Image 1 (spheres, rainbow, N blue to C red):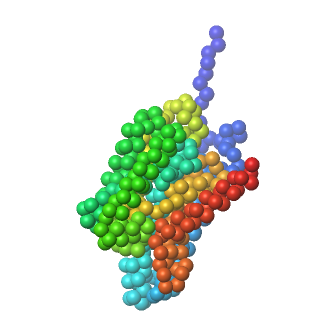
Image 2: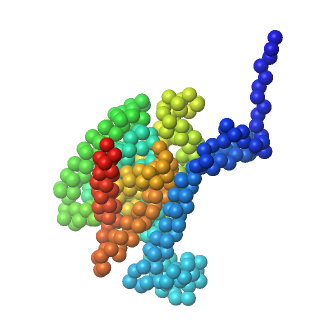
Length: 369
């Protein structure tokens, strides 16, 4: 009688079998921590894209900190950041005025990029963006109620945006049910809720006093003009904490890319992964809206741009975050310096660029047919 022998468990020091090696376009690391084996697979194009985005952020950040009515040379920008600027005014302009704005752009772009990637991954739909589904509009509704109905400003507006985003998520969750988070039903219900909230926002602005309507219209444009360190740091900590909440479901999110059934077959709790992704996605976009107001198209475009540049079926959270940060920081530079003597809201620039992007995308798709 023959006996079945279990294959030996590979050790980290063992050579990787040829038939098990990943494709040449990917890098693979594996090891062992506290007796538990781990492996990390990174596509080369994704790694190149991430490094390119980091370099682009460094360049755009240096320009953002040095450009303006009081121009600061790049070497003085670096000196000001480490507290060794020879010109006291350079330190003031770089550290106190321009750095909070640049950091806020990176924080907001990261939040919107990751939020868009989460919703597009959960729904497996390229239109699965918080802008389309209505969560951004819901956060704006909460802020408008604070501005117009209660006449408050500052942090109270941010709290209203967070409450509005959470309430919208609760309504959508109630309407789609437990099993509707991962299908087209989420997008369709979100479109309906978003359209209703957009009409409510318009009604609030129309019925508001002239002063409140002007404040609301300015806030709805999405601006990085009045950024201070305390507000930016609070938003940054919130975004980092929310990104940390994604760590336990990171593997499940990757498995969902290949399909719900395949993910279940590998032991993934699909319902739990989707619920965490939706909650974190709504919270990220709410934090971004609370900081700057609604900034259009970034959550929709950043994951798609990352996916196309990386040449993968899913955008990946890291690449989506970096592309989103580059878009917002670059758009804010255009908003400040594209027209001499005039400054526009960053949301106006991203809206215009997003429209051009969608037209180009539709044109390319038509040529492929």
